Length: 140
Length: 140
DNA sequence: ATTCACTTGCAACAATGTTGCAAATATTTT
DNA sequence: AAAATATTTGCAACATTGTTGCAAGTGAAT
Ligand SMILES: [Mn+2]
Ligand SMILES: [Mn+2]
Ligand SMILES: [Zn+2]
Ligand SMILES: [Zn+2]
Image 1 (spheres, rainbow over the protein chains, first blue to last red):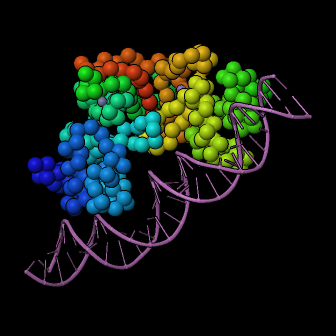
Image 2 (image 1 turned 60 degrees about the horizontal axis):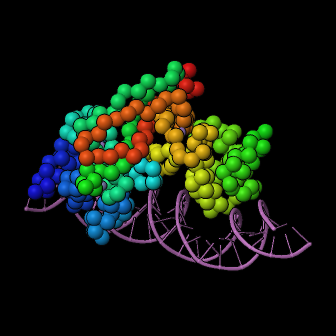
Image 3 (image 1 turned 135 degrees about the horizontal axis):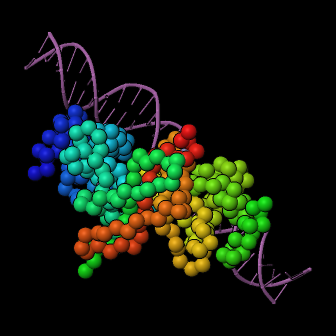
């Protein structure tokens, strides 16, 4: 059922609809939680060239369809942006959670990154907050 | 003059004193701000094998001599830990700043990561806060 | 000085990321 | 619906980054 949704999103973001883009976008829609480049390559099967995956993620990023999440292990994760993002600039001020047990990276959409006061001379442009620990599902 | 200091730190952390370790540790002592693996490889010159740099950073990490800082660009940075760290566990609760102009990553030792309340079910083990923008030196 | 443990460099390899280009496909126009 | 145009894809070739086993080199202890 995410097929329709995927096409809709692509159109809304002025991206032409192709097999690869639809497939990758569906992965994001189905899987809740963030995906790394590697995850996507695996989940998409042998269907798409690695280069295509790179370029697709790049395109999605530029259009603001997804956002990237830094990690401590040299493997950026990506997650879908909420609707409010797509229209213009990013509203991406939520905390990210990385589970040390299952390895999942989760957007805590409801947890806002707190404001932070820096020493004189520093100008803040963006703030990322990464929490690691044990996630809800693993924690029982 | 950081030569003595380097040896002292190595001894304190029960690491045998070798050319490579001393040199890399000196780099950290001299340069204030974080270094990536690549930075170190360049700054150390052609003197050391890449593998040695990896293994040295690994050793420093394990001993708690340095800590790693996640970034959004697939290149972890490392920075010296304060003295309080070395003795036992990490006290690494400061904010990290990444300058979009000069590219430097800076430990804001005086800015503490604020506590954060997560939804029911999540257990926090570690919190990272990454601020990007324009740093003090670039900002004039 | 000798011994023993640890560290290093090398080689070989694996994994990840980048680029140019021609063929394939999607979109727009007629 | 077909042709024209713009965009996307896969391939190949390459660059960069990270990993491992092992023999030789070096540091620390006796
Ligand atoms: Mn998110
Ligand atoms: Mn730091
Ligand atoms: Zn989990
Ligand atoms: Zn700067």
